[in-house]
Every structure is written in structure tokens, then in C-alpha cells.
Length: 316
Image 1: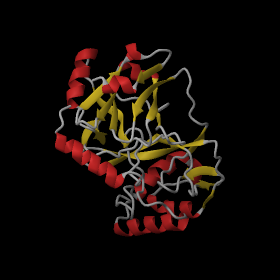
Image 2 (image 1 turned 90 degrees about the vertical axis):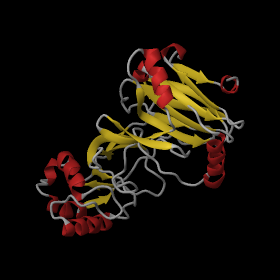
Image 3 (image 1 turned 30 degrees about the vertical axis):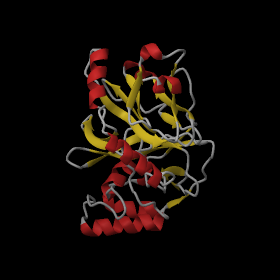
Image 4 (image 1 turned 180 degrees about the vertical axis):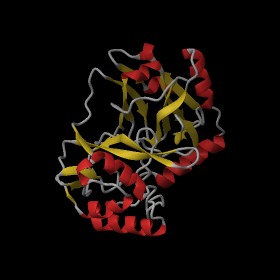
């Protein structure tokens, strides 16, 4: 990757001006939440649905504070709640009125649907898109005792699942970062990865992330599997190099992100075993202006663990 010193200075300025501020969180594959503005309660959701249906009774107008339309909710809930007998988008209103706060378990994770954007800017509902714990202060809702809605993102299709654990079906990459080095990462391979196992432990943070951070500048959109997703960092030279090494066309798939280190230490990325068919690459912008990219492939894993150490990065 070729970058100018100007880009490096800009990156450092961005770090100093935005470190510690909230950044947009995405699902592991770069997909979107149903609503960017959190749902305060079922009445709030009912109001947004009513406003949208008043504009378009077919339910295809985006709701206030949301990427989702009433039809997106209808499509997911019709599938999840056969007993609700949802036949038209108008049936959403009594359904939403019946939502009640649910008891959540701190030790559990919650799987939910999300939206995936096509090149024509139409969103598709993707079931089982993201898995995360309930956020602090979040109130989630159930329909007759069955999980239905995560309030902070308004994602439906909620399923309670045990916490993600590292097992024989997961591999991990330990990679160094510190506060002075903008760090970007991406999986480059012939096909997208299953989202099981995908999580990130950033050094200095207690919580394990199931949504990938996008804190550093330099992002671009590309079409993956017929849908438009955001990729962090310019990986095009690396895609060519990895394609040559693997002998098959390879590109950035559905796991990428960036962050500024919270401390000097080792981060851990957990991936499904399918990641052995490609390369997990980490791109560092060093204080002297150099851009160093290091990738790990099947040969670099020992007992399911690969490591990118500080000395290896600085030696390049």
C-alpha cells in the first residue's frame, strides 16, 4: 500500500481529535442496524411505523431515524412469529403494542437480524447477522415472552444464544498495536467468512467486540456477494499479492476494521477455521511514515494461533 506522509499526518491528527469519541459500529460483515436512532419504547416504534405508513401504505418508506422500512420489520417478524398472524404491514401496529420489556441475561449473547445494502441502495433483511451482549442501559422487548427487538439498534429477529467461546472450530490471531500507531485489519480470501467465532479483543478493553470498529480514516465501498459494504484501508495491492500467493482470485471479504490502540499490547482476533483458506492482514502506519502490512496464512498458525509481534512489525 502506498501512502504519502501527508496521509500519515492526517491520520495522526484524526487520532488526536477523535480518540475516545464514539464511532460507528458495524456488524462483522459491515452491515447496518435497522435504526441509527435507538427505540425508546414500543410507543416510539409504533409512532415511527405509523408515520412511515401514512406516507407509503405499502410499507416501503424508511422510518424516522432508521434505514429500515415497516416492510423490513414485517418480513422478519412474519417469519419469526407465525402465531401473530401478520398478513400485511398494517398488522405491525397491534403487534408492536403487545411488545413488553424482557428479562435479559448478562451472561448470554443475543443474535439479531440486520440490513445489507445492495449496489442499487436497496436494503435486504439478513437473519442471524450479528451477535452481541445486551448493551448497558438497553431495554430489549419480547412478544408473548419470545425475544423480538433489541432497542438500541432496533434489530428484530432476536435469538438468545450462549456466549461465544473459543473451541476447535475457531482460530485466533494475536497482533500488536499501540496508541501511536493507527492499526487496520482485513481478511483477504476467495470467499466471505461465516460470522461464527468472529470477534475482536482490543488490548486495554474488557469487553470482547462482535462489531468491528472503524475509527481510522481511509475507507471505501465495494460490492461483496451482491451487496455494498464498507472496507477500511486501501487493500487493493494486497489483494493482488494474496491472489498470487494463494493461486486463486482473493479480495477483502466481510471482516475488516480499524482502531487506534488503547495501550501498547497484543490484540486478539477470533476467526472461523475457514479463514485458513485466505490471509488475515494487519496494516500499520508507523510514526516515521512507513506503511507496514503483515499477513498470516495457514502456515503461520500453531495449534490454531498465529502471532504478529511488535518486533516483526518494526523490523520491516
